[in-house]
Image (cartoon, rainbow, N blue to C red; front, side, top):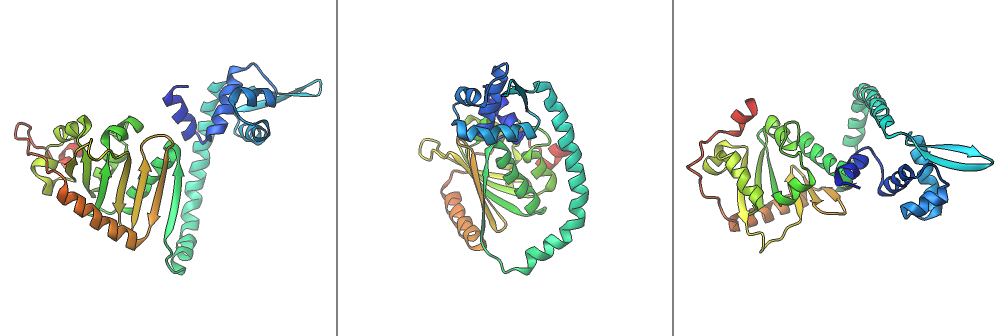
Length: 282
């Protein structure tokens, strides 16, 4: 299965084993649960609840013939109907959310603060972490990050496109002090936005560079407000958010130490400066 197909099914809400069962069913013109489970490489006992879940999601259907239960995959074109139904349900939830938010906020504020850890899986989970950063930060504030751009762009091919995290951060107007590995992607980023090198005080992104061979980092870490997020940039895709003022404060200090030891990019005078804000307004 191609990577783009797998990530689409993950974002549709399917677990890794559900994807295996669904794709095995697609390849067969109807079959028993045990047969589909064997083709998918999933234990037969575990396959039963997976099949029921996929039936509930409208991706599989069942037919009983001569007292035998046969499982069939629904035509993939029907997924478009599932997406329309999900959009309808989300619109209803948005309306209800405004009504329940005051009570949820009151409950959240009534308890003494306890450090919290959230764990997120798959591409959709990592997108949820990006959403939390966007929702937490206010204009003028700063996040502190360490990132391998080469692996980040491979994981999120559309990362630089309008509507994705990078542009939405610019639109919201909070800064990023980023330590990046010296990859071609980092060099291209500095070429695209020379203000982060030539005039960092006026840009929404300021960077320092470290040697890729000396520091083979394979995750993205972001410190924001009283939170820290860490996401893997290779399989298995997993990310965590730790909400703790003490942990966030100490990791900011560690980031500052790394910042002082990292290389400051050489100003590129051959490229005309254009601030991030100007780019955003085009």
